[in-house]
Picture (cartoon, rainbow, N blue to C red):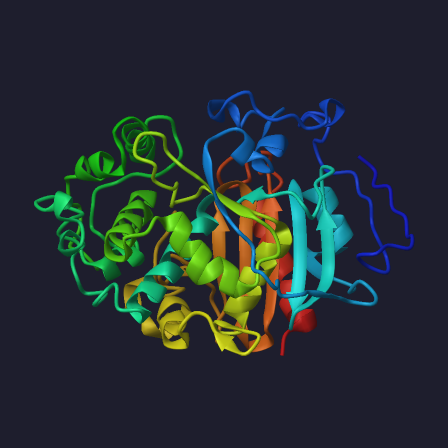
Length: 412
C-alpha cells in the first residue's frame, strides 16, 4: 500500500509523518483495531493490534504507579534523518514503517527523542505489551535485591529461598544459572501449542507457578553449561524475589525500578488468578516513551538524574559479553542454529567490540541499548508469528539493519 506522507506543525516533533502500515485492513483497521474477546484469541490477525495495546483490559492485572516527578524527555527541534541499508537498498525510518508491522519506533539519545513513529493508529498514551522484554525487569530486580541484602548471593540455590521447591530440579539450581537461562532442564520453548512452555503456562494458570515449576524434572545438561531459552526460569526467579523480599513482583518493580526510573505513566503486570502471581516472563505493559526511559536508564549505566538506580557493576555483569562464560558470548553461543547473539542476565548481547545489548520479545518487541553513545531504540510490533517473520517480511533482520543504521548515524 502506498504511503501517505505530510508535514505539519506538531507539538511532538517539527515534522510528523503519517504512514499506511502493512496489512492494516487484515489487522482490523475498519473495526478500529478491536480488543480480543478473550486472552486465548489475542494473536488472531483481527485482534492482535488492539490486544497488544490493551492487554490489561482483557486480563486481570496489577498496577505500577508513575514517578511523582517523571523524567522529562526532550523533543528534537527537527526529527532526525534516520537511514539504513537492507538487502542492497537504502531506506528511511518512514520506509521501515511501511515495510514492517511496527506499532511504535522511538529513538532516544541523552534524553532527547530524535524520532518517534507510531503505526496502526497507536498513540504515545497506549500501554504496549512487552512480551519477553519483561524478563530483563526481573533480572534488574534481582540486582536491586542483592543491593539491599534481601538476596545474599547469585550462587545461592533456589530452595534456599523457596523451600517448597526443595528436591526439584529448579529448587537445586543456582540463581545465576537461571539468570543465564542455563538451568540444564530439558525444556522446549518453540511457541507451538504443545511445547513445554504451553504445558508450564497451563499448569500455572490452574495451580500456580510453584506447581508448574515442580513439574519440570528432567535435566538435559549440567547447570551453567549451555544456554536453553525457557521462560519458566524467569518465573522461578520471580518466586525467589518474592520470597526474599516479601513483596510481590508488581510492588517491588514499582518501588525499586519504575518510580526511580522516572516513569511518566502507569504500567501494569498481567496476573494469574490461580495464585495472584505476576506474569513475570512476558506480561508487562507500558507506554513506548516509558520503555524509552527504561532503555535510557540502561544506556546511562543505571543512572537517572544523577542517582544510581541500578548498581553499575551488576549491570556490567548483566550486559558485558566479556563477563559471561565463553558459551554465552556472541559468536560462540548457539541459538536456533545461529551464533549472532550472546546472553547475559535475562538480556541478549549483540556482537561487536562495543558493549551493546537488546531486550527482546516475541512478535517483534525490542529495546536496543548502546551505553557508549547513550542511545536507545524502542521497537514495538505485531509480527505475524513469534519470530515476526512468517509473512516473509524478515522483521528481525530488517529491524537489526535499522538499529545498525541508527548506531552508524548517532553512535560515538
